[in-house]
Image (tube, rainbow, N blue to C red):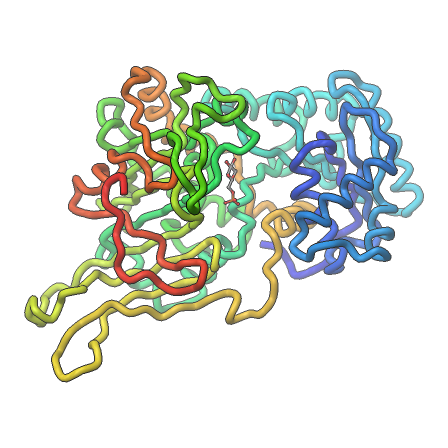
Length: 516
Ligand code: BG6
């Protein structure tokens, strides 16, 4: 895991530098790393894209992006000027060798001017279809051969099923060694996701009860209020299962379910995570309907404003059967988790934005209090709130003040904002620094990725082959289709509503019913 130190000299070459990711995420993140002095003094950014553009124009566009999207707000003139002076731009066709030759020459020049062999980070911010060619061209230009300092960063999607993911890996590993490949899942860079490891393994309080003896079930919810925005074309081919479950939700599942690592070495953590995925019970094709449900949003309202249905969005087919909501029940077949269900759900156009994990504990073995005292009884619960209002909440029973003995759920709450009074870095800041430090802990290894594809493959297959009329719909601004409620209700359980409103007040025991 990352040592607490500044990055070594590095050049970040961004392919697809004219696109949204560079503008909204990558350059604001690099600029903040620069301001926080995490970048080495010797650093440079090289943007590469097909569009001809002067470097002045390129820098001006990046500055606009930082002004709009940086957590610090608008740039400070002097600092930006110094940062921007390290940015250059090359235009060219990714299918031909010319632009790669120009990049190689620029890299050699920087090394000579700095008198060091800087790390060379090739960031794929292009559409996914270009990644294979990009890797091949980097190989031909001999840009991958320095095994310790050349690294490639790959954005998702990594394939669209197990077979294509394997094919992509074969292409990448024909050029780069596995340790040079950094597959980004930006959820792993989020502070609260990283904090799961600290919470579980730096405290002796929780680990003894973190198992099937005390835990009844686990819920992992990633709810979004946004629709597909301008990404209809991509989303049509992806859907919620590929876009969110196969990566972000399964990574969170790994962190919740993994065994304590022996050390914080990248491979030790990744081995423990892949062990979880290997233990996930395979879903037999004839059980898909009982273990996985999907839905698609129709027109509705979010925060009192009317919004379009998915099929009316730009780039989406009028008869699309792509799911914008998915819920899956999984089991991890090992000693710790045998028969404890993990319910995962995610959806777009849900009523509130909330990413949250609920660890729901077993009821007390013997209930000494009479029913009349237990009106609002609910089992103990630990809630890990990933976003927004990042924090952790423990819910338990307390006596309501008054003469009568009446029990009521209350909570203890840890809030990042209140405890630390510092702005957390953005996920991309953390992950970019990790790449520069050569720390792959928070990145996905090929075997993890392939195992995760293998788990959802039967669901993809079943959904692919079912009739479009079978696709359940939900109104935008509701908690998903009715079948989602039924998935968990068949086990006598129910989905738990996000615990915190944006104001920071906890909801008390409100529970979502089917299709609410
Ligand atoms: C991306 C998905 O990986 O994550 C998007 O492709 C989704 O569809 C996004 O909106 C959610 O990320 P965050 O950080 O906003 O929770």
